[in-house]
Length: 258
Image (cartoon, rainbow, N blue to C red; front, side, top):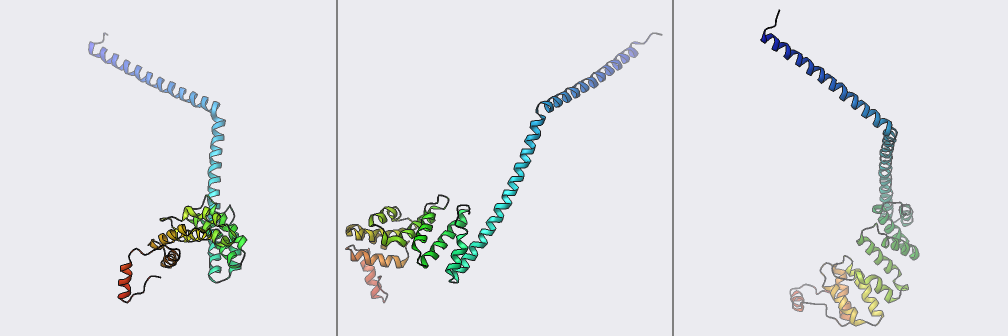
């Protein structure tokens, strides 16, 4: 029996659908096989290296976790030791304070704890009359690149102050003159010693203006300014900018600046 044109068309469409379905299945199987071959080939070629890389990564993460725990624990221990040293110093137990601080003065201690410990140990050594040890510790801070510059500068000033009588005036000037400038946090302390070194060299013409500059610096403590004002006058420099203001202050019952 012959098929009608409509039935014939439907049969052709069904055949085409079956064909496309078979082709889709075949393509998926081929794609899957290719992917499997690619993965297998990659693993054969790079599998061992990949495993090694994963092991190294895990080892690195483990090492970092251990290091982080270790440094955190050590930092906490350092903080406790420094606090105990400060407590001893406040109680007047210089020897005990120095002993507590001495364990934190090594290069393996973080700078945040090392610097205060070195200052504390140096101060204790100075109080006990051990100038050599105090100078060594102050110099260690002054020469430590890991410590903020203002603290290094302060350590340099303290080292010079401890050793001033043994130093040549020019050595004092060379070391502290860079700090004896307005705007520096330690201008007053450094400037006083530089000015006195100028006096020892017979250079009152340099000492007087420097003392006057310290006296006029409102950022300096009043005790430092008063002392500098007296020294400036002693060496022939007027450190008073507004004499009338001082006269008015005296007239109103206030004390004149010293």
